[in-house]
Length: 315
Length: 296
Image (cartoon, rainbow over all chains, first blue to last red; front, side, top):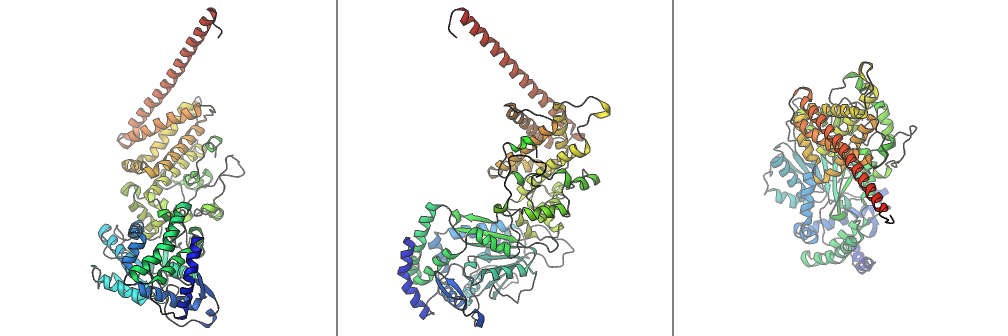
């Protein structure tokens, strides 16, 4: 209930922002759709942008504005909002996926060695660099390559800037691509070993379309892995968490990044994201097999890792 | 499943419930000693049918675990999906060289036409492979008894007693580990990790349950527990001996097992003797007291 009052107090601001859509930006991780003009039949369909309902055609540009503004202060803000825990989550995520082939590949395999990884909404390269490090240092695999795709050019620019510091700069192991996760015609069918989206799918306009697209580009046997904010199951922890996210985070955003609205959107979009079970259902609906329970809660369910495996066509 | 198995049913039980003999007749006839012969590599119609009803994946759609046994409603085979069974069966072929490791799983996945990354199907990693080994060997043991007449008296001799049957069954089970003997210590280490202990114990209990049931043990009182505890001690210690046993056909292990079974029998007899002795002394004391006029 308290969150409701907080929300109301910011509603007026949010409405004003709609009228002048080019307010600053926000982010946690990012992904936005391209700036292409909306199709006419999309005009009337509504989707949510935080707690507001906006036409589907507008969400993309709204979310784009959020992430363009936060690109530069991305790391500082993530550290402050999650108390540094987001780094542990990301490390765990990459470790559990264990990217890279430790074993020599079969001789008759002509499809190239190493894994072909597609990191969606990975503009700043957080996950991509971790995966390349893991493949190189843990599995001694110098073939695995990552394509970072993001809808937001500013976030991609941030990632490109950071990649200069890594050993993968200017090699064929790391590439950048601007694109909309719901429609990626430049990526052929059955071409990707591992598809990751970390703290990004929440912002997609049509999540199911993105899942279907992931299913298309993955090779049979390939893995869809997603880390996203989720629902906290423990009521006590949930109360504290909601207090933190609806009171503290927008304030930190205002103080540190000078941008309250972006971080208000962030917490609202987290609230709107489906629960672990619902999202697992969506992954299944796209055709994936679910291993075990299908998701793993982190820090009591604040975030959750979802996985799905594309079946072999014969199975 | 058997009547006694339904007791102490654990919630994760059916993950490790091995296939019933009906699914194994085809495979068992061809090469019973070959690794991975128990679970067919190619999905059978029956498996597909089953998967349709109980996908491994979702907890919500899992069939209710029943506490009764019915021949008309057999318990679910296992919780593995076709893909998982295929990969695990293929992985078992790599166990003698690579051990119960992620490497074996990865190679198995490649053999089955999957990618390296597909081992994400197994959230528990190598422990899933170990559980699969345990469950499938347990199913194989059962099918040896039910289809291959393992426990039939030889050459028209007297039928085996329950104790003899238990020994035959344990040795048969240990011989199945012969192929992976060098790797089994590593597997035991993985099984003893804190997070894996509950499932390991549950699988051990299922195995002992099967052994006692197949041997024809029908105890229903407190000895139900004591027999399983005693057998657990005997089986696990013999398993350790087996990992270091280099003799032909596990002869040393067999001798060790014989001694342990004799020990446990002797202990049982001593406990019975002590109990009887205490009973006599007690009743003597009561009788003595009464003869002195105490109102006991």
